[in-house]
Amino acid sequence: MKKIIFVCSLLFGAALLCPAADLQSAEELYREGKFAAALGQYEDLLATYPNDPHVYYNIGNCYFKMGSTGLAIANYYRAFRLDPRDADIRHNLSLALENSGERFVPTGMPEVLHKLFFSLRTDELKGLFFLSLWLFCTLGALWLVKRRLGRAAVAALAVMIVLAVWYGWRERIAQSPLAVLAAPVTELRSGPGTNFPASASVAQGHLLLIQDAKDNWYDVIVKAQGLQGWVEADALEKI
Image (cartoon, rainbow, N blue to C red; front, side):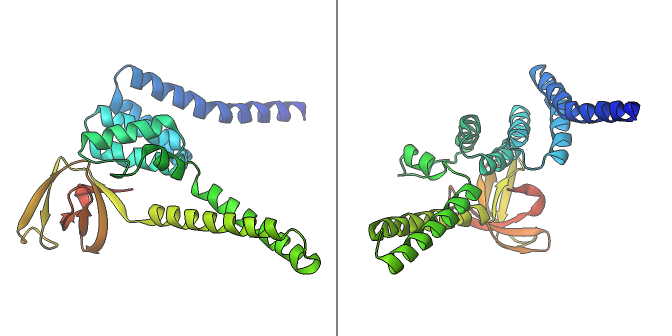
C-alpha cells in the first residue's frame, strides 16, 4: 500500500512539474533567438492552458520577433482580454498596434481613463454587479419594512447602475467580431471573390470589424482607415 501511495505521489509531482519544465524550455529557446521552436512549445502549452494570458503573451512575442505583426497583435489582444491589468501585455499590444498604424487608446481618450475602464476583467465586473444588486435589494427591503437606510439603498442603486453600464459596455466590446490582418499585404475587394475589383491594399496588423461572411470571404471595415471591403479568410486572424 505504501508503495502504491509513493508511486502515485511521484506521478502527481511529475504532472505538476511538466508544465513548469515546458515553460522554462520555451523561455530558454526564446532567449537563444530560436523563436519558431519557442513558438511551438508555447502553442503546445496553450492546448493545456487555453485561458492563460501569459501563454498568449509569449506567443505574441514570438510572432513579433518573427516579423508576423498581425499574428502578434491577435495574441496580444487575446492576452489583454484575459488580463487587462497586466502592464507588459498592455505595453506590447500598444507598441505592435502603433507599428501597424493603429491606436490602442482611442483618439481623444486620456490614457488614464482607458486604463481605468479596463482595470477589471469582465467576470469581475459581473460579480461586482450581482453583489451590488444583492446589496440594493437588502437595503431596499430594510427601507420598505423599517424605513431605515434609505440613503444607503439609493447609493447602492447608483453603484449598481454604474456597474451595469460598465459591464454591458465591456461585454459589447468583448463580443464585437474583431480580427486583424495577418497576411503581409491584403487587397480589399468590392465583393466576395477574386473576380471583383480591388479597391485598396492594406498591410498586416490593421484591426478589422467583421460585418458579413460568404463562402471563404469576409466583409470587413478597417478601423484605422474607415475602409470597407471583402478579404479572403486566410488573410485575417479572428481575435
